[in-house]
Amino acid sequence: MAQKSSLLAYKKGNSFLHKTPAWCKLLFIPLLNILFLCLPVYFSLGLLLIQFVIACAVGFSLGEQAGDLRPPLYYASLLIFFDLVAVLFTFISRGIQNNLFVWNDLLILLKEKFTWENQKESVFKLIKLFALMQSASLVFKSSSPLQLRDGIGKIEGAIRKVFHLKKENTFTDAISMFLNFIPMVSKIWGQSKRAWIARGGKKNSVKMFYVLLPVLFSVGMKKAWNETRAILIRK
Image: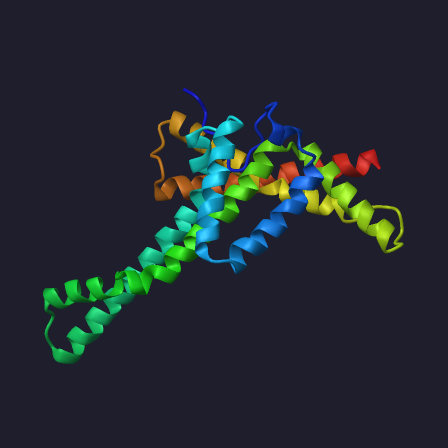
């Protein structure tokens, strides 16, 4: 069975996006993020379509692209959940006040809450969030951890040169480890889940999270410690 790609995990390739210098892509992300947040939602929709075409052109499958968009989908699920909870509390409070619970009132409240006017802003924010996540996905999937580190080092070196700061880069190691933290944790979690299911555990059960979260923390801390030691040894 083919393993699912981890969140924002690097994928080898020989496309123009893979050949683009990492420092260039790292500078491009903040600019896109500002544009996504400041310009109308139609800009985000257009860029989202362009990013989708680019991702397909450089060899990222639909499953891989969908996998990197899971965080915004979880966020959307939370928004819907909290809206439902708000409607339920309103229905219960009205029922207690009137000493009468009419189920038709609940349907009316749901229709009022989930109108386009009430949900429009949330939908627009989600579209922008999808666009932000897709831009990050293109960079992470087309740049190896070493390329990202070298790119950050070049950016920091240029900044230090412009402002006449000391030559040694002190920011590069910390931020590169932080950027690689998300795909590393996602990979550990995916491996743990596959091992859990292979041993007969029930997928996405409460027990699975109870057992695997401590494993995720322990293995993640171990890998972070090993990475830190490796960096210190090279210095």
